[in-house]
Length: 340
Image (cartoon, rainbow, N blue to C red; front, side):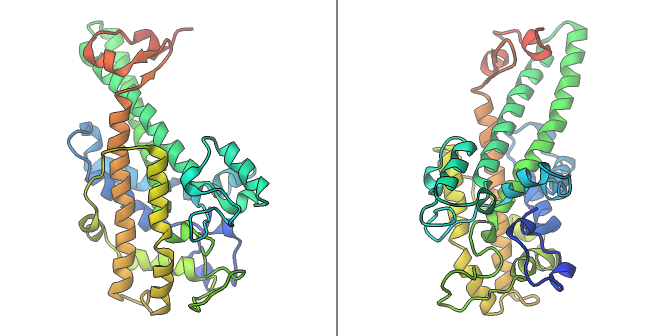
């Protein structure tokens, strides 16, 4: 779990390695998931637009931070999903690193680029790929749900109809879980310190012309007790942005989202230097609220976009098109139950 510095631990540790610090803490991640779900439009299925679903996603949004301690290779492979350490121009780690705007299709190719640039893969992080992978999983979930719901509504064979219903309910539980995973990584991406080499105090190996803090307590100070005690769900909801649902392209959208957070790194350190995160200083409260609202807004939009994308997909084996099942022109039974 990258970048979790619990308040009690932060008081005793001088420095932690990069992979031991995580984003927002329980309260921040929970509020991102809840705010996004509570803002879903009527276009989405009713089971997602309930207080129970919002609460479930809020809790599940914490899950990737609760995975820590599973052993190896579990921890090493998952811990580095929470961040991507960039320099100011959007390149990963160093001037020789990959540009966030032009990442290769596969994470393995990204790893190869890092190694070719002399960068330790574990130091760099792979948050962009974690976001894209999580979003694509939600798309697949929605595609299956749309087929199951349409088939259940039309099926006249009672045994088949019962199976469709049970599988739809299983899929609904998976959808909530997978939205929770997406919520976590989107929340990580809204935290400026998860997008920078200056993730826990200004990096000691770089110039520091504005004399920003180099304290290894910086990360935990911001996202832990401060967020829990000073930021609330209502404030986040009020700060959420209008939906952005046109002209969607996943890689470009992901890069733009992370670059906005990267652009808040210097403002964060200036605010910290000015005392903005002391007690209930409204400047710090506003900064944290706006960043959490950015995460909730992005999650809301990505859920809607996943729902729309699902309508264009084909899933199952033998392959069946969502649009054809919803139109009543294809029977999905073998595709859903599986043809041995």
